[in-house]
Image 1 (tube, one colour):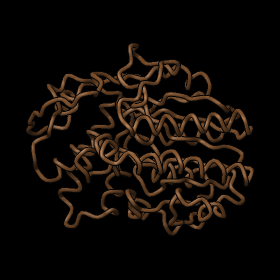
Image 2: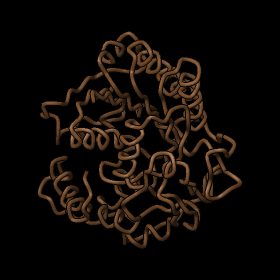
Image 3: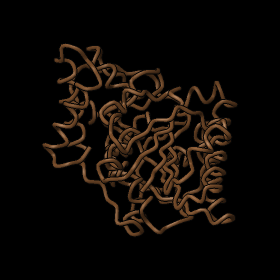
Image 4: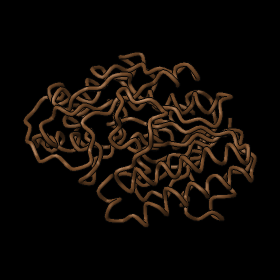
Length: 330
């Protein structure tokens, strides 16, 4: 298939590109590099079936030509993080909502066979039910979560009204190699990774008893590719590990010192996906256990710290060695 991946230079997007190329597909990687990093694509940038396009999804006319001849669109581009969304709601709306509309219009115009959207479990807010099923009410606590939910509504509306084959995947706490380590408000794994590399204690929000449905990035990439190749359309599906783990347990596995800071308002004490629907509809299930995933990260951190020069190639070499060890494709 000819596949266009938006947000391709990001954490998840680069793993999706990697998997698609490994499976023999051709990839058009679209990213404006505002948050993604082209170095994430360096391991396969010279691949004969890979092409990088620097473009902004907010500019409909600029991105439209790149959808010509595309079979699948995997739409990962967007703004993330909670606190910046409170400070910059217009920017988040412009990228996550208007940008998604532009992607949908370009996909519809060029007759794309399947679009898969990256939604966020944060849109559930603080749910009443655990594990949390897809019919749980959307109660977004922050502009980021709201704009991701609005993007999903657009995707499912286009599937229903315009018969654009599309699915939305609600992602739970994705972690793994290439996690973003810059910024003060990133996901917990990215923050911990940056602190480990600098030899700093790990900063725990609250008392650390809160649990998260940590889902390894290669499993998430596999969910996107599986969804793109399916005949299913017009549904939202959770993507999670099938379990949940405390932040304290994560710190125990990573090792090192720790420090505690006050809990932020509006954050759930638990995230835990009910994954029965995606297992039944797509036959997808995670392959990397939490302990295996953390072990990959812990050993990669040590390999990166020991490397004479910390480069993307050294990161990917260490990462791939541990994927091979576990029998997983990166």
